[in-house]
Length: 225
Image (tube, rainbow, N blue to C red; front, side, top):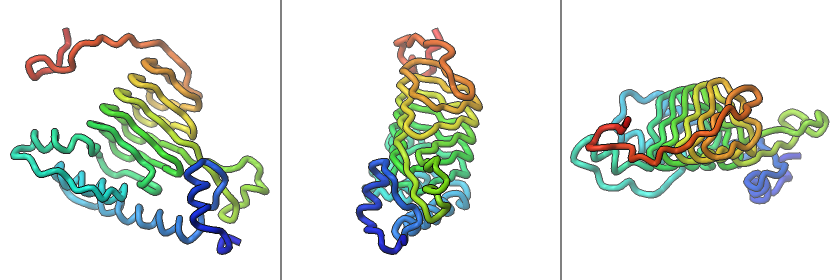
C-alpha cells in the first residue's frame, strides 16, 4: 500500500500537519540520514565550538558556510551564536524541521520528534531529558494500524528567553511564549502566555513574571542589582 503513495505529496502532508505515512522509503531514508549524523555527534569526543556547529549543520542539513573563525574561544562563541550549545547525547528524528535561535543551550539526553517544525527562540535554556513531541497518532486504533497506518503532527514553538527545566514533555501544537519558565517534570499540553511560570501534569499557570528590563551584563559581569 505504501509503495503507491506519492512521496512529494506525502511529505507535504507531513509538513502541513495532516495525516501522512511515516514508513515510505523517502521518510525512512530521511530518518536514517539524521540518525547517522546524530550518531556521529554523540560518539565524537571533546569538540570545539566550531566542530559542534559543524555537526549541528550536518544534522539539520544546513548548507550555509560557517563564518570565518575568531582569534579566541570567546570570539568563536560570539561568531557562532546561532548554533546551539549541546550536551550529549541528543536524539532527533529528522533534524530538518528544527529551528534554533541565538545563544540556545540544550542539555543532555533531549529528544526532538520533529515531524513538524520545532522552533526554539533566542537565549532559551533547555534542561536535561526534555522531549519535544511534535508527532502524534490517530486515536482510532483501526486507522492507526501500526506501521501501516498514517500519523500526523503539529508544530511546537518555544519563545525567546525561556527556561524549560529537566524532564519536561512538550506536546504537539503547543506554543510557549517569550520569557516563560516550565517547571521540572511538567507535561505541557496547552499554550502558555508569555512571561508565566507553569508546572505540573498537565502544566498549569503558577504565576506571572514581571520582566526587570535591566541589562543582562554590567561592566562584563551579571547584573544582580
